[in-house]
Length: 408
Image 1 (cartoon, rainbow, N blue to C red):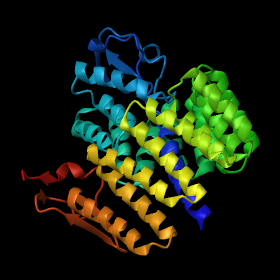
Image 2: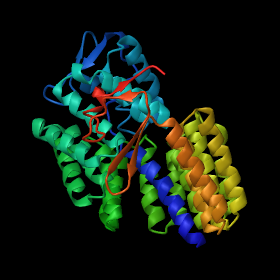
Image 3: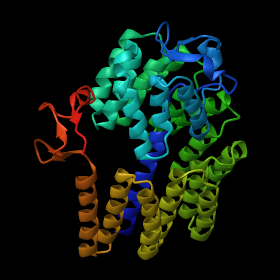
Image 4: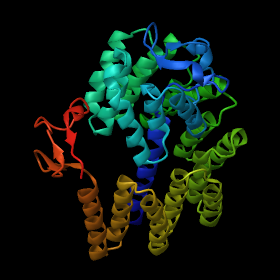
């Protein structure tokens, strides 16, 4: 029973990391004059940019910060772009994707959606694609990104977006095909190699995965993520010491690269050294730049206690994590924290405590979410009295613009 819950918690954590690692959007060079940036436009490629003074986009975004998964570093540049042009829809979209909290993600996505009718066709497909996944509609995102690829067949980033969609649905063979097409179009495009490695890993093709990760390292050897991803593969192969060595290489590139600290801790747990793992996680917490990183450290620390069978201390760590969500009024995170605690109580056979956690999570969602899908075999929607004009066809990004929220 103990191993069952450990597996569930590790899968949850891995899901958060994988989601982060799948983000691949345009970043900005540190030397760009953001006062010159006006908007993105789609011409020969998805990334083509219309600017007054800035150099062409392939020079302007030379660092491609997000594509190298340096998300924290990219936030200030998106904010500067928005300050220079409050109608910069794609900057809001990219900022949404690097926001450390669920609340921040939805706030920025809503701003991008408010401008969706004022952007180009290619930009619209990207924005609606992210809206679709936010609405838990990956098939709708597939349709949008397939159209993107049809419209821009020679753009590596269009293929990469579609590939990540397939990857997120665990459709690894078509994902691999699209990632391969992306790097065929641009052999220097590093991000697809990261996802190729994970796709092959999930298919059990470790040799192909290792080759992809090594190419990833070759392309951007001064970035932390390639070493971190290769370390994940080594962990999966049971090579814990080798994995720790690669995680340490990642930290040598960026001492604040949180996933690698979590990775070292995970491998120490797998080796049975719980105290050393928690020391690493305490360091990660102390170095955290925002509550998203603090929550990640607390969650990982809770896992170490669960694996040891110390459920009470695991709950204590999760309560600290929950307090951070409450301080930010991060409703999805609050509900998720309560659900995780409920699962732990359930595994202990404390069914009353588990039910109390589940009921609290449900109550938070009912009270705080203006629209809450209810899955009972058919589509039901709970609508607050101040929400009007919700179409009967269901909740999708392409119809949310028709909904009216009255003052209340």
